[in-house]
Image (cartoon, rainbow, N blue to C red; front, side, top):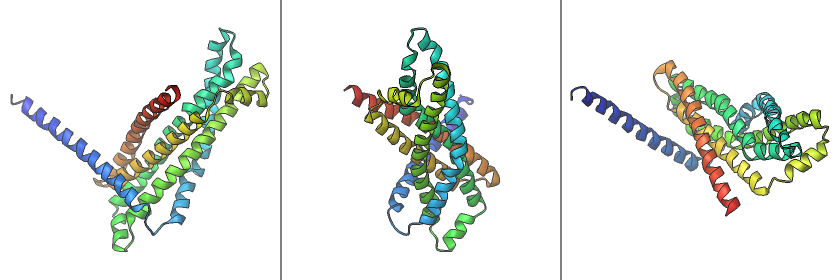
Length: 264
């Protein structure tokens, strides 16, 4: 009995911390929606964050998307070749990239790169009391630091997702052209013949949800960092892990909803 009591106490504390953290996170997100539509609007900082999140991520997105298209094509060809259905390869690749891989790969890359960067940047500002200094200077730090970054991630990550999908399709085309000598017109015609507007809308909605999630989680963890410089690393790590977890949850939910719409 004496051994089980401390364990129950620790378990109870863990449950309390979890629900308290969830409540604070929803309160943080609600505050974002409350302040995002009221002036002042820091457009210059927002554009700067779009540059930091979007343009600086292009080399990594380009390389990853191109390799994803090539690898997925090479892995899919032997299975289709067994049934003599290699002509279906462009359609298969297009469906996989447009419906899932383009937006999901981009979100996972940005969760690691952007989420950790935002968490570490805001975390370092918190532990060095720069955020408190902004409050003393009559500047709303939440609006200047959080709102601009969340809006920037919500805008740029869908654009990066579309770009990643295009680059992946180009990588797939080069792989298909090398083996079947398929023209680029024929490749994209066969590929997009099975793509519907529902697939495009679903991919866009997923990317917007992913961008908002990555931005709000990174800002929340960094804005509320504690424990000195050690808290900066903890905030960056938690931002990446939690953002990736929520991205997978959103992927499952949105795909399930789109399938209901498609078949019912």
